[in-house]
Image (cartoon, rainbow, N blue to C red; front, top):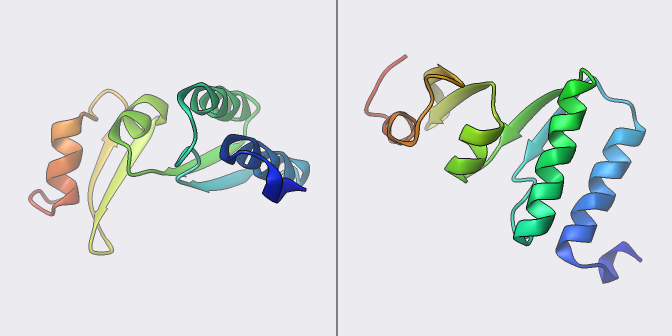
Length: 106
């Protein structure tokens, strides 16, 4: 039973179910929340492999290092409104935090 597995292994089962549907786009909301560092690295590697296979990933995360490290483009929202868009090269913690609290505009 999946419910008897660790959090990390539960995440792996969920990812496997999604991939079995052969999606073109995956929306991943906090895909590494609550899992250990080793499993987090495995999930990140898995996401990178999916991107290499042409699957678009929309990654939603409250972890800035995850967003900065995994994203080609970053869109920041504040109160349901897009406040900033950054490329991988432009994105950094300071810019993202400013946009997330609504102190810069598009």
